[in-house]
Length: 154
Image (tube, rainbow, N blue to C red):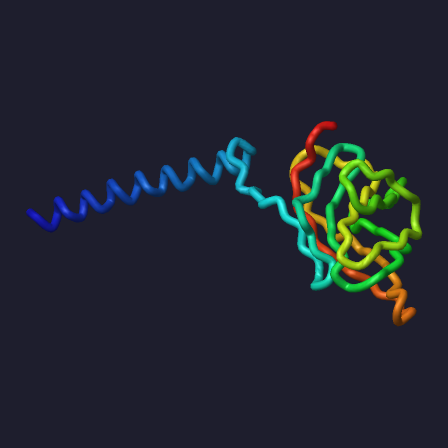
């Protein structure tokens, strides 16, 4: 008698658990539940440091970075998911004016890159490639970073 009650209890709880798992799966499939929660982040290799998360609007993306490599000349910016319509850099103060490429970035200086592109709303995970030359060595390098962020309206 006790084993029959125990078996019936386990079967009832099993069906309840199966029902809830199916309900969550259906809501996720339909789009009611969204499990695509990605944290906003900016990661570059050593020497080019992100100092803030990316700001992404429907028309452009802005990154704040710090040059810890040496004096360099940034010659190109690329974004993995689109062909940018504009690429500019500002150096130093927050309200500094943006300049077209190539731009010389002093050592230990904060610089902001702005890439114009059409972004759809939602979360974006992409790669940013910065092509630069070290003034001291004359060698050209590419720093590839990963950004994740939410598109906000301007």
